[in-house]
Image (cartoon, rainbow, N blue to C red; front, side, top):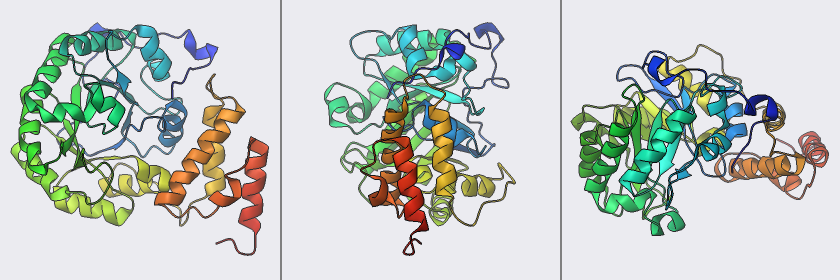
Length: 356
């Protein structure tokens, strides 16, 4: 979902010039080999600017990756980057201070490289390349996980982007284990490394699996041990116990979570404590009312989030929390049409004698 900042931010300019950027001052998201990190995953139509702002408020995440911007038959213009990633107008940071990395998707090395250059001129301080999206529409049009079927293309695309953007701007890649074979990841990872990716995020499934179990965390660990660049582990981290198992099976210190952060809003803080990224205490239980109202406040900042859109986003979130977490009130709010109606229904459900 494209999101536009209000006029007070729309006229802002990026906070740093290209010539002054370096890895110690970049705000757009950087993975360093020996420094743990927790990254908010890109989820198309879900982790847009308001959700990134909300998720950044706790301080648990090191940075977020934007929803992918698709590079198809034309190079993307500045206005598209700033429309879809409005954080580019505020130094690469959400209103709550979390850095955001820009992700692009496509199969043509030249157009990807030229689009990355425009993204940097628009304010991007870090670029990620999506080779993992399993969506059939994307894959039919030479993007996302479809590139996994020809690993040398990953090297070609990563190399083109890396050579095109200024050296201080990190370039990373996100992949799956393979199209239909988990053993493909070894060649895929080597191609990303040879293309000079600064780090590699691995979703521990194949494209054919989609989001079906199982995840193959040990395979991520095998790849990590063979590469000279950091590996970010991703996939099916729903609970803090899952997180610990992922740590044990991958040996990683860098992690990415997406749906788990929506299903359980306490999970990012729990994981950040495990990594030593924060000393904040974790509440005993989820305060859904406070969480959902906090998200509404972030939606209010953006011009294309009028109340009826915000209600749809709230229902989208709590449906994920019902399916993958233990949110017990979805049936009570799923038919609501306004913010007042949504929160009135939620209040009644929470006060019901049968409420958990």
